[in-house]
Amino acid sequence: MESSGTFRIYNSVVAGKAANQKKLALLIDPDKFGSAAFISHAEKAGVDYFFVGGSLISKGNFAKCVETVKHNTKLPVVIFPGHVDQVSPDADGILFLSLISGRNPENLIGKHVLAAPVLKKMKLEIIPTGYMLIDGGRVTAATYMSNTVPIPHDKSDIASCTALAGEMLGLKLIYMDAGSGAERHISLKMIKEVKKNISVPLIIGGGIRTPEDAYEICKAGADMIVIGTIAEESPELVGQIAKAVHYTYPITHTAT
Ligand code: 1GP
Image (tube, protein in one colour):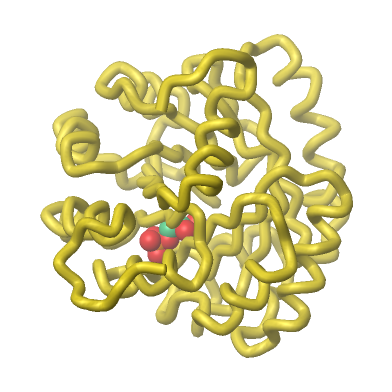
């Protein structure tokens, strides 16, 4: 995990992709954050990164949450911002998200202009990320709060061309998300088609609830998966999902 330089986090993701070593990120929503012990548990269970953020924070304290996560792990803590206020110098990096599945200019450039001078004063690793919301069977907080329409579940061609355009624009990661608590995760067909079309690392999240799902999604082409809801509901599953992502879970089919 450790590598020197400004792009330590991104380089670790790229190195994982090159070595076919899949990664697991655990999303911490400040509104639902339970305890510091949960962070230590997740690290021991095999999580590779912590993401912190939420589409709407109404009860939690973002800065305090980042500080607590950082204090309780040696793993990279990466901001996954749901709002321009979600920045903290205590994190290691931030996914600088362009919501390229949508047509809301605020999420394509407006909020970035507001965030840029604030981020310039911090030492966070900035990771330009093409963020794509995919329909996961219900309207999620991310879709509602961003005032955008997600890419339809079965429109792999739209997803594929959107991801390619994101890469051509210079975005360093593509993150496809069915949204937190999605009824169904992104289809394996869509993941495979997108993967064929891009060369930057691919992150998949939203609605991943079992080790089997995690395994199949990685096999289809995800370089990293993100889980949130299932870890809050069943923390004991985090270890099994980590093993599935790292191809050490006892699933009989052969990893490719
Ligand atoms: C949402 O991808 C994350 O941005 C996590 O989704 O809560 O459904 O695991 P879940």
